Length: 319
Image 1: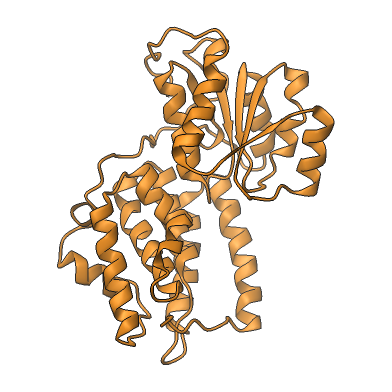
Image 2: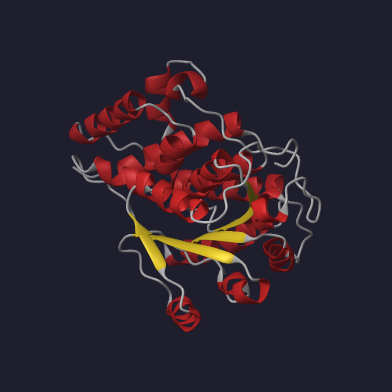
């Protein structure tokens, strides 16, 4: 059985479209507390306006609340919201098809960023499946979380093996303690593919490179693309994850001007936008496809290892 998911009324869908754009814009401008309040409002509206005996899918605002905490350097606070978003994704699937939720952003963050053990995730899956089997419509994901947690905080429930490496202190453009040859610009959608960006970052650091990621730097409002290009110009290499089109065109078309070596990766079967596809063809750039984290790691290591390998000591403070 599938949890009855009701289509949003047109007026509510239109309202949410505006709220999504506004809140994501606040996130891009690093105004995380304001964005978090906006996503919390979206969640409360969905929770309160669900029809009796049915439910609205609430994974998006819960995941974005988690992202505001994570990008703000408050990863313990983010964990509970990623769990709640994952519960929503599990409830979205038909009974017996809960594994489909594993490919969604919340699950990828729990697995790839926090390294939550499979045993904890299986428990969530089993509870969600049993609710469906019994015909219970779960409108509030906290019901499932509380059933599993029994009063314990999220870190004790999920038992994460890692704490995401995100500092509350922003890096400053132009102030590097690493050599130019050791800097790698990392671009992509951190709203949907943070796990992949985090994996690229870790591989870079393991090989002695300084991963330069725009959201880790101070970004004045309205100057996001301007500062992203500044950061790109400060790097000798770049890695772009283009599964989700988030405006990478501007940076990619400047690669040759800046003489930056590049690796462009994309998940298997993910379509490229027509504009991106045309740009890559005109620049004669090849897209490397991957389906699993191990394949992404292999691509990144191969790219960074084919050039002169730097000293493996990571520079103090260059984070």
